Length: 385
Ligand SMILES: [Zn+2]
Image 1 (cartoon, rainbow, N blue to C red):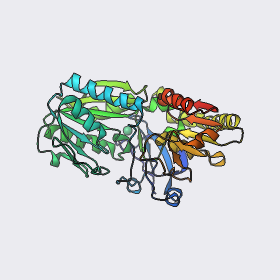
Image 2 (image 1 turned 90 degrees about the horizontal axis):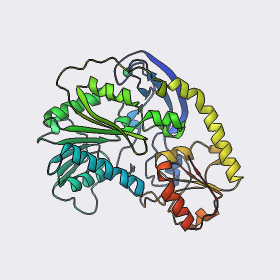
Image 3 (image 1 turned 90 degrees about the vertical axis):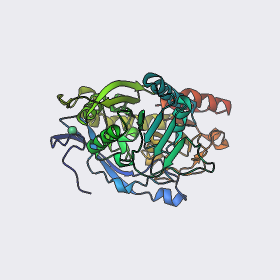
Image 4 (image 1 turned 120 degrees about the horizontal axis):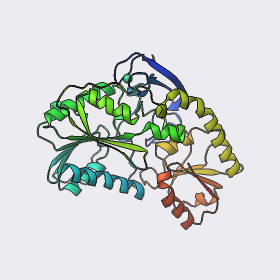
């Protein structure tokens, strides 16, 4: 793969920093048909670079077509109470602040449609959802909701919308500058709705030194000032910009700006400096490996959470791989972790009791996971990252 030498956000050719994570699985959130298929997942290096102008951190050797965003792509997290609460809080805040009751909502990249269904229920609204990984379920969708297994552009907009929702999409889109401009065209065609973007905050990843939050599916990592700047460059004004989900994510609400954008680019900030992060990461890998070996003492250990964080972590310690990964999502149970032969088991699986250590990948879920482990009689150590 050839390396790109321009920023996909602002187009600048002034790039700096370099962090290479070698041979990573190209997809983490995926149901593999067989253990062999999981082990034979395609692998590529992640080569992160940072734009000196706008501060965007991106994978300079990203190959978008290698990631299978098909019906086996499975990234739902809604089987956790903490995540469910997050979704309800985001949805109800959008409905109240922007008065979306009884309106019509559009979701760009709606996944399996869970969030659109939730917010339309809260708002008494109708909705259209677009996603190439959308798969019709066994039951017909309610008549006020339409889903399309395709990408959406302004050409598909045939009626006004009060809101355009785009959650956990922009970190997957390689040509992010053009994508934000196409969102602007959608907003114009839809009659100036509120645009709500949700995406991880790179500041959180860098503060926590959570190198397992860097993975192939995410080709972009946004600091708050970088994301706001790129949206203004695309012709939006920022209505609200908040940290959500224990500050791991940022939620940006936009409208079409009345005039042209004029703002100095934020550049590289102390809080999200790739070069600085790259210097600290080797030490972090070593200290975490030591904590695992000290706690597990050569006995089997496991990870709670077969989401991106957990799958990423399971791949980072090939010499002392976990025996299993626990997940409450029935669609994941019985499957195998991408890039490995590690099984995914349910929270009541008896094999958990034989573990010496369970590592909890996402601190937001720690209380409910610790409670479940206690309930099933787990007596080993838990380690929350
Ligand atoms: Zn840039």
